[in-house]
Length: 224
Image 1 (cartoon, one colour):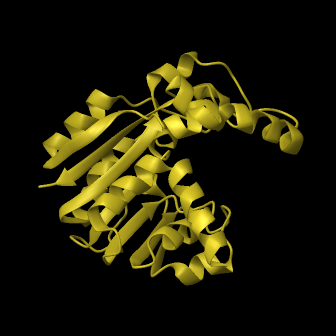
Image 2 (cartoon, rainbow, N blue to C red):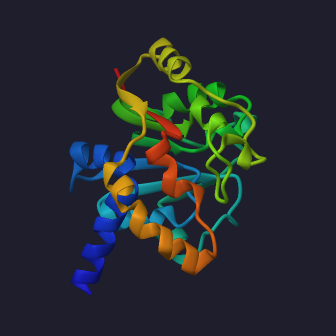
C-alpha cells in the first residue's frame, strides 16, 4: 500500500509539476488553506494525497463534474457557484494561502473580473496559480481532448500573459514566475504514451502534447 501511494504521488507530480511543485516549495508538510477553482476530476483526492495537511476548499459550477463521495469528504467546504455571476460573498476574505485556477478562464468571457473578485480571498503573502491556453494554441493541429484552442466549443476567450501580468500588478499581486508551460519529463514520455493511448482510446489525446507544443501559459503570483 505504501509503495502504491508513493507511486501515485510521484505520477501526480509528473503530470502537474508547476501546479504542485510551487505549493510543495512553499508549504511542503505545513498546514495551509487552498481554494481550488474548478475542483472536478477528483482534484480533492489528488491534492490531499500530495498535501495531507492541506485544508481543501473547492469551487465549481456544479457537483456533477467527475466528483464522488470521497471527494466531498475530503473538502472542508464546497462552493457551488457560477463564476461569471461574480457573487463570491460566501467565500471569506483574507483567508486562503493558495488559490489555484487551472484551465478555467478560457471558459469565461469576464475572466479578468473573476480574478479581480477572487484576489481579496487571498491572504497577504498568499499565492495565486493561473494556467490557460495561449494564443499559440489557436495555430496547433486539432486533436481529440483539445490541442487546438477551438477544439473545445466551450472556450470563449483567449487571454495573454501581458494582460494577466498587468491585472495582477494593478491589484497588488506580484508575478514571481510565468511563461509557457513546459514539462520535459512529460515530453520525454510521449513515445511511451502513444501506444498506450491507441490501445486504450483508439487515438492520441491532445493534452499529451501540450508541453511539447507550448499549448498553455501560466502565472504564479504573490499578494503583497
